[in-house]
Length: 174
Length: 174
Image (cartoon, rainbow over all chains, first blue to last red; front, side):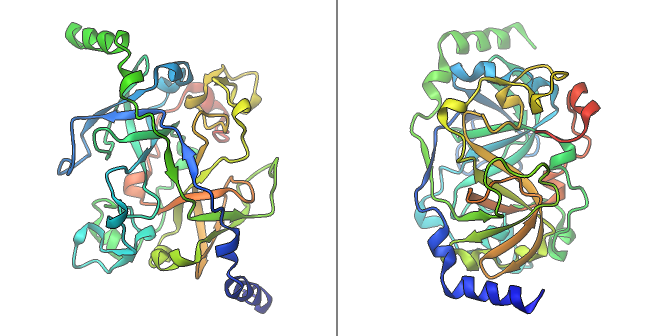
């Protein structure tokens, strides 16, 4: 890290560039579908084996052609049950006292500033505009914003590094 | 698959349940940051080694505490350079004639109905509200909607199945 780059970083910071260049207009996204699994808040003790249906808008059905060739998909959904007042700057993952408090963006907590969930789930079957998936940690009625096929050569990083406390627990990110 | 379940599926379809229960209101998301890498359209030939800065809104800086403990993060961003007229129902991945045409939701194409990108990238460093990442396939100025730490026990499925043509090419999803 050269002195010159450090200087640029410093300049960027004191000029408040982040405040100025981040787009101010909200991004508006029309849901493509909805989650159906019968689980209203607070959800099951474990989502791992839970089956959900993702029901897409009827007119999007042709856009799914070919999805059954994949064993897994990525589901992007809205965390629409979190109110603005519940959001937090810092959280303790899983409420576990042994874990040091983290900035909320350094966790998968739902109390994040942008209420978006991203989950990798097993695709069990497609029937017309309905996808049956397993392991989706979304409540019944959650708006689905996007879904994508999972490509291991692009999405899987099995040896990605995590903090020591996360490796020690090795149960999951929540 | 029992006859009874088939009947329920059929009923769901003819009653147009998908059309009725998918939330109609758009989800509005305020960007938490912006991508800076100097690449305006059409982007580099390969994104693999490209370094980008993600500049967050200044006031979100404390929410990043702890993110440097992870080697990889998931970046959710808006594909804001795609106009409504460009969207497609079906696409041929990478424009490759050997690949059968796919429904756009069965690809990672940008021409999808909900213009959201999800990328797993290497986190090189954090400095205050600026994250330096490698391999982000987002154009300069793209609004960042969310970012999350990557947990291999939750996000990595190295043996996920893909169609034969994708395995044969094995270059990437685009």
